Length: 428
Image 1 (tube, rainbow, N blue to C red):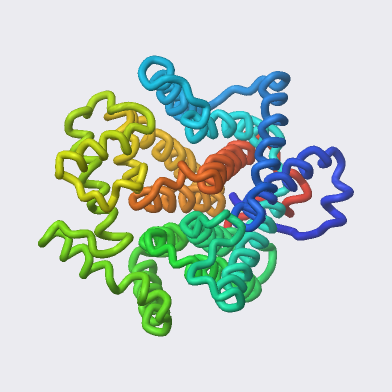
Image 2: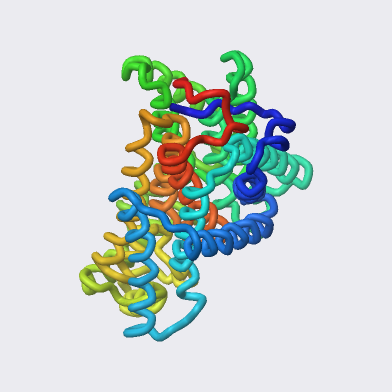
């Protein structure tokens, strides 16, 4: 059962006892609204949510389901693994602990939202603002400032800007299903917000993230449980046709993707790096595999990739063209290099527990469950060619958004839904 979005400020204002959930909702809304345009706001909002979550943990007793316990354990295991490595092998360095420590911030936020909830309409507004802002900033930077690739307000992070823009597009279109209005208006609003998010992604030139689009679209089509696989397939064919048309009409996209098959083929034939993306990554992955082979169980230590790779360069195994890079541009290989099998298991446990939790709510709340799945699927793909958790914007966005959506799904099941967020719980 999914709450319908009634965008009625008066009802929000006058609902008894709703001040604290509204405050939480405003902080929640600021996460997607500002993640890639003014991320400093996202960071402070996440910090406030964390503090409120700690207070909730101290003064509000909660009992958890098995799935929720697995989420909490997974989010504790990853930073615990990094901390043990730093203390026992690498030597403590707070900057090395930063990436994994974000999950410790996410747990109190999960507890806060699970206990109090918030008006879900505010999350939709935040996602919508984020999508529009991303597309508008992308157009401005690309066509008015004439930058080759737009990056919003992420301090040069075209990858974070493009990937999160893409997620905001799909999240906005998914959440538009909850609007308490007729289907035509839902479609116009949803597709309009979707278009802005896609524009932000396209202007960033982040081609690695575009590979996730078919999987995100399939997940989106799963919102309606009565939609058959044949119908989904027809929509997917239409989606691929539109993507091909956009590629054909856009020299910018062609310049980003057309060289990839040639670069990859040339690399496998000669081992030469001929571009700054595809063949470069293949060489980085080759180095990672060499390192992993000798340290498969426990890895070679936190932030050890650059040192180990330089050893391989000195031996003539790896090209010196990658010497300036400090990571393999693949999160899975990165965790294997640093912590071996234990690192990969801790990584996958975070993704799998979130997917299982959201999937369990597909019948109870299909829209928000699919939103959570979209974020996880997106990052599963993004991190094949990069390390989004290693970037402040990408890491905070993932942790906080997954915590919020997972917790809200639990809140709706175990708590009565706030009166100001719906007329009744009705299926889409």
